[in-house]
Length: 147
Image (cartoon, rainbow, N blue to C red; front, side, top):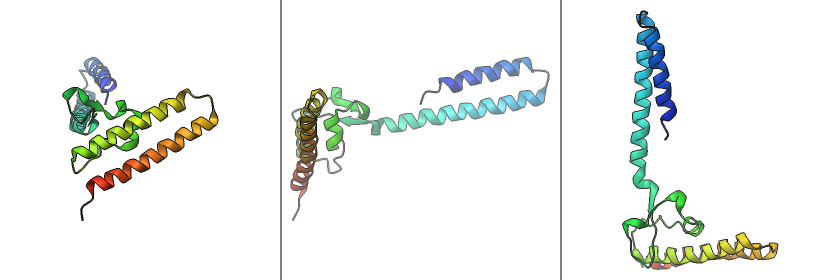
């Protein structure tokens, strides 16, 4: 959360407080407002810090995870989002590799769809993406199947 606006508001309140030093009622009221806004800023910063772990997802290439492969969700490719690359509650490496492979194929279809002038080709790309997502889900089910 960007707290710049709140911080600017606090500065404005401090200026008003400075002008009204002689009136303790106004000074106390302004002090209370400044305190509350500072608490809101602290809570916002804590929330951002708490969510940093959830904001980042592993981007896999050839099954190896490197620190440089931690990518914010909003920077994931279309394919990575489409297969839910970050969702692997069992933490099975084969699942991540499988999803990564399907994500690359989906990205190729999405790229083709984006540059195509043909409505039919765009439709076919969309169908292919849907079928790749379906195949990815069945593949994950097969990888995680336990009798």
